Length: 302
Image (tube, rainbow, N blue to C red):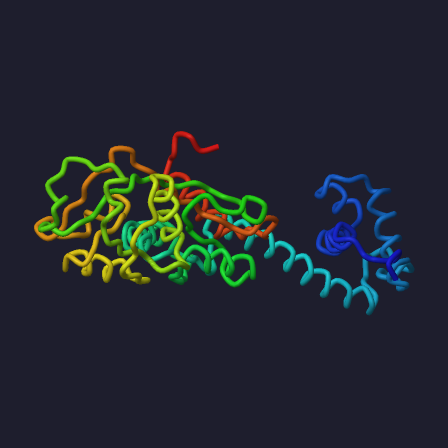
């Protein structure tokens, strides 16, 4: 019954009496008074409704019930100690699997380096990557199918906790033969007559670029869409249109084939790590989030 539940302290006191062979020695070693120790053992006997010690002899002798309780109590105490040890180990050496959703560009630009560094520091944590657009990633997090995702900001602050990690300026990408290729910089509204090659609508970059173009006074003429950044690059290289990419993507391209031209008033590609609000955060996930915060020390992070 609930009122008769044993406490771990009672079991520890009982095993101490048995191990030290007397109430006085046990009391001395566990730093309690002998009357307190005696009362605790009596309370344990009442809860269990058995006698643990023979009361008819001067020597401390366990009853059959006492022997059984002693054996089981030792197991319970050892198991409890092991839990604390395992939890301490877990906090010192995180382990487990973290499911992360990442858009293709992020996987291309920096995540392999980050994953390798994190894996070196925390070899017992497995990072399982799934590659989708930001909208799909948000859905998967909301359905608890992945733990965290890296998405283009802004996103829904009511649904997700957000850790901003990166800001990059967008640039105009053209083939080396394009009429704009030798320009030092470009106003966005100068692209009103150009053919655009963009990510498909499930990617946040699709809407972001369209909205920026609309703010500049035009709707982009989209001639091709793809879910793969390298295919978009090939189409631009073939002079079938232009695209807008974050500045960092140029490091993955051949400068003899492509040009990246700054915008006079650049808009930003802002990335953040998101997780579902009020979601349980494992030691492994907490470690990853702290690692990312240290790897991307944004000055204006709140």
